[in-house]
Every structure is written in structure tokens, then in C-alpha cells.
Image (tube, rainbow, N blue to C red; front, side):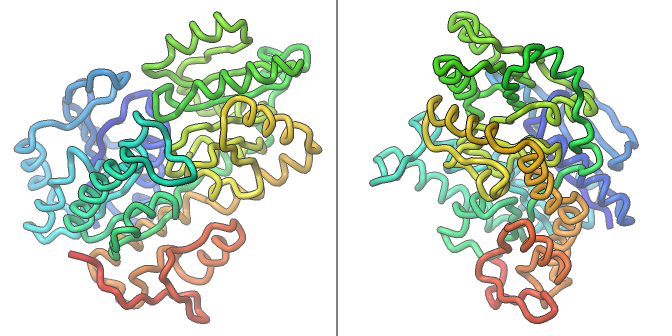
Length: 427
């Protein structure tokens, strides 16, 4: 089948979303399908790649985003969709591209919306992340706005795909029943403990310092300031530590200035396009820190685990359910992150690296591809016996159990691992 995929808010130096699109497209192609990816760019282009056909449509840069572009002009996108004549539509932007669900319904094309972000969390971010206790007025207002937008998204598409239980909560709380949970994956060959490189450590930590790595876009939702706060707390305790920050974004200049002013040893590596180099960095670090409070999956954290490096994550994000016991979740600021870094670094090296790798092995990209293709079949009504089973039978369920990742709530499993659910997908 021809699977046309639309995505926005990516750049040539994008991280997780670009990786997910590439890996899913490659998997679709290997499974015998015809994936076509439509993305915005600086100029029009049309090329055949390892992930299938990629069509780039010239689109403007969104101000203040550090280079993100969007597909504008509905008429052109409509014409392109008509020309491509998709058998399935897969959309990775529930803001500016939500209207394509209506196009798909009008043309009889089963459609998926992939939720790569949390509207609830992004709307709250300017007011501070919600903490335990009674909800603030701003929390209630942003939640109400998110609920209305999410209900509209669920109504417009045959299936909404979320990558974690945490990401799905903003849909389940409003009773959305056309929801699938499919975790993303990691390239277990590319990211491996064998990529550990003493030359990397000599470059950044020549005196045996604790090497703390952060790999993400340097933007508000990633909260990179927490990395500097953790490094400052480590320094104040007399812990010799250096930071390496891989990535670019609108907050980069401010972070550089802060690091210099605070007298911190931080290396800004900018965007690293060489995946082998990224793999070496991840495998050579002592600890990776992923402090973004609204992360819905965290591919970089999973790549770190696959590389044998434990991760410190934000407790308020989805990452605790991804990392399991191969890292630590933190609620707090620099002191709490420093505590977690020290605890992980104090564990026996072989044990912590083995635990990290073992956790990542529960998330192969092959399972993610299977899950997304199954979601497409369910959206088309082709699989009536497993409308909520996104883990592809007993083998997938076993992998999920080994990794500790819970399948979709509300699904009952029979002895063969098939899931059954009575509720029909909302139309």
C-alpha cells in the first residue's frame, strides 16, 4: 500500500522526529509498501531515498523556532495528496495539518495522526510545569484548551497513535477510544556499548572527569538550563565533571553565555550529523541527562541506553516509563539532578552499562514498524479482532513485558496474545 506521510516542524538538523520518520519509512519499504514522505524545506525537491520517496515542498521558517519550517498553502498540499492517491495517510503534526483528516475522510483514505508532543504540556510550559497538589488556574485553563483540540484531532482521524502511556493520558482522560500506543525504537546496531571510544574521553575529559552528556535541541521545552544547573551543583560539591552539549537551537547563545559566566566546563558540540560520532559520544559518556519535562518518548535517551550509558530524566515527563530501572527520574532542580548523576556514576560500570543495554533491547525499530503498520490496518477496519492490540501478538507482547512497557490500557489478552476491545474507534 502507498503510505503518504506528512510532517512539519523539522529541519536538516532535527533530531527525534526526523529519526522516527526515517526509520519508519525504511521499515515500511522493507515490508513491501510504498512510503512517501512530504516535508517542508528551503526549496522544492523530489527524490528516492532509503526510506522511500521524499518530497520537499518549499515552506517558510517559523520565527523564533531556530529554523523549523512548515507546509503552508492548503491548496498545494491538497493537489499533492490527490496526485499521490494514498492508500493510507499518516500525519505528524496535529496543529497546522489537522485539516488533512477531513481530506482523507472525503476521499475514503484511512488516516492516522501521530502525536509526537503533548499539547497539555506545551501549553503549560510558559506557566511552569505542573507539580503535585491542587491544579492552578492556568493548569485548568490550558487543560481545557488541550482537551478541546485533542477531541477535534481524535474525531478527525481514524486512529491516533501515541508512543507512551504518558503521552496518551491527555487523550484517555477525555474518553478517546480510537487510540493506539506504539513505542518508537532504537537502532541497536548503530548505538552499542562497543562504540565506547577512549579518544572521545581524552578529548573532553582528559583528567578522568565525570563526563555528562546532553543531546537535544536547545529550546525551551527541552529545559537545557537544568544541565548547567546540575553541572554547577556538581562543581560546588567538588565533583570534577565536564559537560558536552550536542545540539543547536534558539537557547544556544544564552546557554554559552551562562556557562562562561558561571565558570563551568561545558563543550558545545553543536549539531552532529555523523551518526557514528553521536554513537561514540553516547557510548563514551558516564551519564546522559535528558531534563525535558514534556518529552513524550525521548529517542536520544533510548539511544544512550542502547549505547550502554544510564540516563537521568525529568520525573514529570514520559521518560521514566521508557528508561525503567536503567536510569533515574528526578523531580527538582540542579541539586536533585546532581544527586542522580552521582548515584548512577557510583554504580559498578559493567552493571550499569549492561542494565542500560538490556533495557534498550526491548525497543527494536522492527517492533515499532510492526505496530504502526498494524495501526494502519486497524484504521482501515481490516483487523477486527485486535483493534487495540498495537504489540502484534504474543511475540510483541512478550517483548513489551520484558522491557516493562505496558500495552494499551483497556485491552484484554487471550492465550495467543491477541487483544480485544469492545469500544469502536471514534469517528
